[in-house]
Image (cartoon, rainbow over all chains, first blue to last red; front, side, top):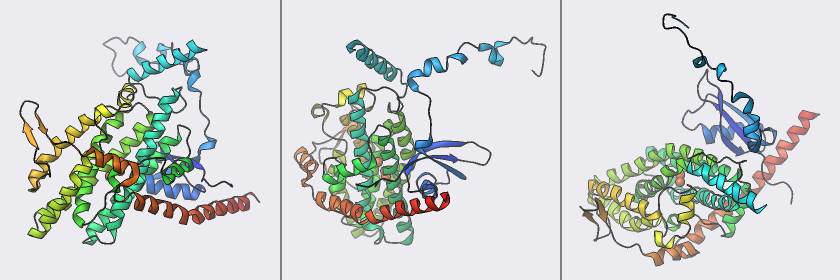
Length: 95
Length: 314
Ligand SMILES: [Fe+2]
Ligand SMILES: [Fe+2]
Ligand SMILES: [Fe+2]
């Protein structure tokens, strides 16, 4: 049998001008134009978006969850990257 | 090797117990994956087949307002099906496989949709009771352990409450109308009450998979717990409408702070599950027909996309 299933697309929606596009789910479509139209019908029936991105799922590369611990380890012990690490004297304002 | 496997399972259960969501690429026991694929696809099929009994009334809605509302609701159900199919696909099954299983009768969908919608009041009962029962089932699933399923359910639940309200409003309008309209509402309630109670599935004692599903936090309440909640919610609403639920044993139990109610006809339930309900053949037939008659559209869209891609590359 020839390919019958339409490719899978990941859908990202900007809910409001000024905000990031956020992943909302996926859908099947024959091409990008159809993916955007379907995304409008499936994910924005109640004004949930002002802009849509679609990316064919096969183009998404992801970090490996099995390696998550080691992979994110470099950030794990650097408390000094957070402002709360520093003691600011009470008399100092605006810092 | 064996111990590694056991260790993984223990870690997995520990994450579940800590309410940490499982995501598609995380390790999971085979049985968890299989159970989820079955449950999510079954749920998706229910949304899809669930469009048929209401679709039947779109062209016969009593006013343009009702028609627009019903059309919107049915469109939502198509969306729910899509959210859920997508969630199931993250577990490694394909859309084609799931649809093939639905069409061959291998996969199930909610038995409620194998009952006919005979009058306009049925649109009221479907929204009020059937979507009401669906909401009770679905709200706890927003916290289910599998991330994509939980996220799909959040979206579904946001949309469901309008479904129930529009149904209730249809019932309210009929009940405030002429005596024949009120009779129509009562007659529809008589037919839908028991099948709706069946939507929560077999009694806990006859539901051997419940314990495992609760352990995995795929399920968060038992069938009987949800059924009781439903009765407690619906009896006062029926009273408000001036309707009587068709169960003479329904009675408030002061001690339990809940309504007592009668026994579901389980023979009927299993009979419909096995495919012998009033509309099983009709529903599946309509699904298969739509799928087969749509085949050329799916093929043409692919061919068109290919041609455009080639042109763009040239
Ligand atoms: Fe739905
Ligand atoms: Fe549903
Ligand atoms: Fe619904």
